[in-house]
Image 1 (cartoon, one colour):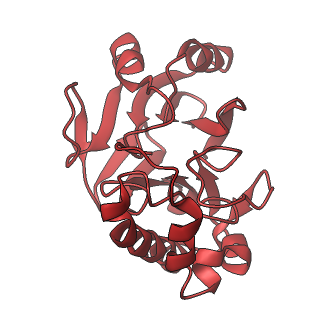
Image 2: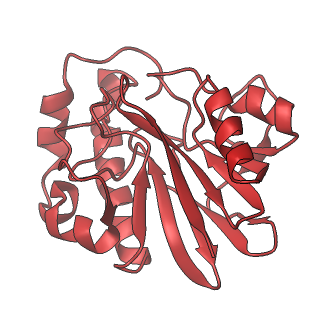
Amino acid sequence: MADVLTIETPALGDRSYLVHDGTVALVIDPQRDTDRITALAADHGLRITHIAETHIHNDYLTGGPALAAATGAAYLVNAADPVGFDRTPVADGDTVEVGDTLRVRALATPGHTFTHLSYVVESGGQAAGVFTGGSLLYGTTGRPDLLGPEHTDALARAQYASAHRLAGELPDTTPVFPTHGFGSFCSAGPSGGGRASTIGGEKRVNPARIYRRRARPARRRCAGGSRPGSG
């Protein structure tokens, strides 16, 4: 059975996650101050064996390389990302076993960045949660304009398609765990204000799911706030 512990960074409006089965743990999108993560793992008697990055971030420095070096954990990063550090490359459809009970499946969900991945964590053959990074957020999506205006239209369309992919492939009961959307500048619009949601809940309230022409307004909301890089 999977349990999810949340590490909040209110100043940035972001979350990291520690997903575990009581023995081993997977960390999603760790921030640079990894002592918070290792302390939480120690408090619960967990061994960190895997770290997963949904995308290369613009609003904070990742703690992934440092945490991987400190723990010996496998560091999952999209194989298409041109990085200068050691990583375990993953791509759409790849699966990784975390201990004896957790299984992680990578889903390509471009839109916030071109190489964005979401991760479905399965336990006992059921989806225990989907970690959506800057893709599907609570009541909105991640911004598609952070790579510059020349890419915004393509990324907005990709973000729409990614939201539909998540909604179409996962059960309505699947919990959604985004990294952004709690005041983060990476959010395309105001978050729904909730502290938790599911795929079914987002089908009911998320504009990317309900309105078929939301990609163009999303671009207008985001215009003018970009800089080269990732989100």
